[in-house]
Image (cartoon, rainbow, N blue to C red):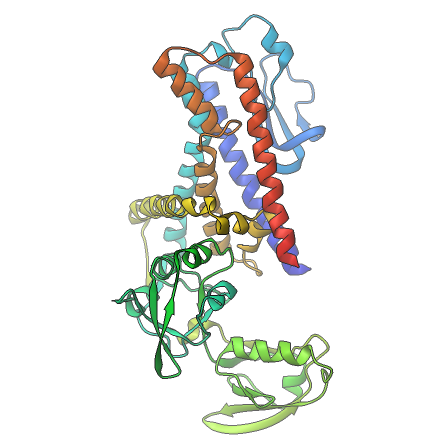
Length: 458
């Protein structure tokens, strides 16, 4: 429950920041062109608004609100046809402080303000990440124990322990492993390596001292790209970092011991240990004592212990970073500006490149809702990871909002561009109908994405 609560808190904090910045972009340009903003709301507030300030705004004054439905937010701009449409206001004669009376180019800037601010926010966050933490990369090397793969990767032929060698005949091991970024919780994600593998038709790996070849069809590659979990992570040995009160401590194990086998099953990597413990926990013999083989100062030892009722033995394992040679590049504030800008632009380019897979069968299955978004945040609080994910989501929000779909900013932009080119403004009735159709489409997409999350639970 604690892990779920931490992820939900991170999700709410991240989305709140992104929504406020996005709506502030619309707000700022509206104020710049002297358009009244009647309401600025974080989250939607149908039927109920949690907070209002001021409670009774004067004419022309903006009311700031907190809604109860965390599906987004909005600014109510006077004289604009959107989800907060005021029919009574639109029936009155146009006023000089309304959106509808402003030149098309001003209305266009008001509509793209949210997208621009989201992208700028991502760049600012990336700049501060580089300035604060620098850039840590794994020095190019083939991992001694190979990689652990996602369920999707395993289903198409990869095996835990495989060492990646070539993609369509081109070496990838030395080049791609240097792109892994270490996380304090031992989790590794590498989008560049994922694309290299997913776009290849044949991947050569080293498996148990021999070569093996995985043939990847285009459909399989799409499945890898759309996988919302991860592609691969480093395998690292089971070295005890510290002990808590429990079976391992009672059995005489100590900090620094290297566990090599559990219940007679080799545990070359931490993932092997976890798999073995899960297997034991799920059997009728759960609670029985089992043999643990470990080495201390190069000398082998045996001990017996009984995992607790949750299948744990009371050890905290050494972080993966301790077994890898890292290279950290520090950034000054000045050098982090171009670095963060390039990172933001490359993130956008990568996301746009992968977006085409959304329209495939695998892409539709892989769409995720709030559960999927929450799952990308770490189980333990990690500020670096939090800001990285917030920047990434800000890029996604900017791109998704500029798509030419009615009810999104991109839909408004499309109609405004049509008006600027043809010198003909679409009728209010048409714009209102397009808004309704767009909202229905977005609602269907939202339900489908969150339904996929529910299916994944089972």
